[in-house]
Image 1 (spheres, rainbow, N blue to C red):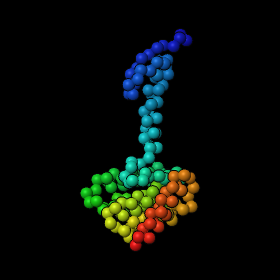
Image 2: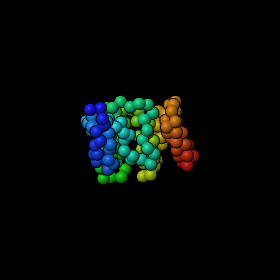
Image 3: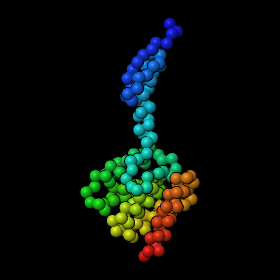
Image 4: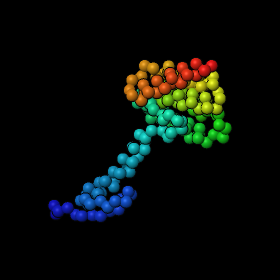
Length: 155
């Protein structure tokens, strides 16, 4: 009874698992829960040259709103239509993701020739992130300040 039953099960990854039947049953019952939690914790999809980072742990509602805004932004038909992400920024002006969204919209605004909007977004990104801690937040603050300074030097 205490012997290990050898079971061969082809997992989704294509590998064959060898383990006690009770352990395999637990894995297959719990795996969907783990996958669901991993999907919820995954970062938002990449929409800008710079990846989106939160400067502090974001609430679930804010992350859900950002994902929705990104979906709308991805379906836009006019290249300089930033309304979906700007609506997100209006709803979460000091949110965890706002700094990163401002920095990304600064890049996109500059790319399409909306220089005053680019300045506004980079200025706001710097304002939100200059006191932040953490490697990614500091890098975002540095990038925002650099882009802002370069833009001001050119014009």
